[in-house]
Length: 211
Image 1: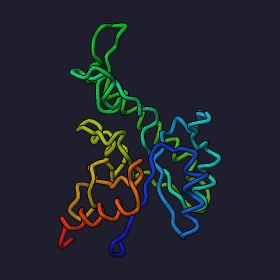
Image 2: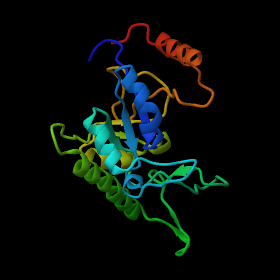
Image 3: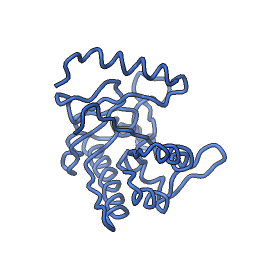
């Protein structure tokens, strides 16, 4: 790993990654990683405001050197959580309320649900991105909304994942927890180049002697 290495990551698999981000990345000789909501690639959502990459676009970009990993198969929804008046918890990290049965999902059913979802995402990515010269090794994951728990981590490890990304701001160092890696949000609406530089300098200042 070279000094001061930077990993550029995008979430959700929006088609704007292809139309807006990729041309600019190519202009500067850069590549990036996109964490996909995998089911959206199989059933691309199209609207004037929001569209997602389909498999053909993903496979083409993958051959050009861009990487794609899991952001779950279809667990990016927010669900009702006790004590919150509106949906505010990740479907990946919270048991569901089963309204037809008037009870919460059992722990066993919850774990089976996340196992099936995470395996489906892994299987689809391997199927679509393992052909040709580049072989896809599914070892990276980004938690929806940055949320995780012990069950999610255990299932991901069972599936062979080694590095998982949160949304907690910070720099990755050799001492970072590989299942709770921080990231720096450079895509918030209020971020400018100047603000991003200030944030990077501030975070770097907390690590005067990075290992």
